[in-house]
Length: 170
Image (cartoon, rainbow, N blue to C red; front, side):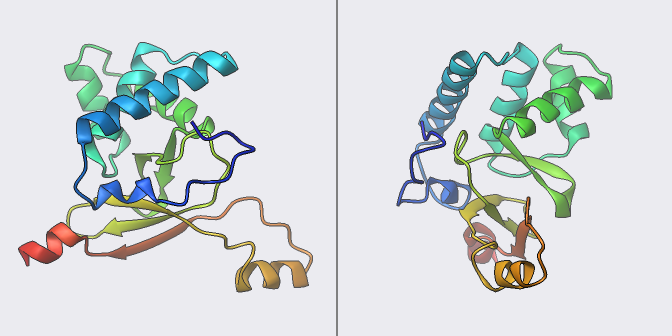
């Protein structure tokens, strides 16, 4: 697990959204990391929250709240929108999941527990999402903000394009 004080890894496991990998191990490792972190920090990873995280990890693409709600209903977790939204709120607030603004959907974080500024590459054909690192506060945008006395608290960087799988199919 990456803690708040450790640097980000030099490899980029986030790109698994676009790369072939041991998907079963990927999901199991991420769930174990989430469970460990929740235990360490006294957070409650309820069955519904765990199921939502597992769904997002399984997909490696953004899912909307109503798709998640439908899956929860099929799994017997309830059918009211607050069920999904409460789970998503917890997962986003604790850094296990990110909201993809462009799609109004959610994707599992590739670096849970790490303080980072994610940037997302979103396939416009299949909605696959890969997470990379960005540092907008350090670049030209950050310089412009500092020049006018603006303090950046949060950024959302999303790039739309075509993933390798969809490029190969075309």
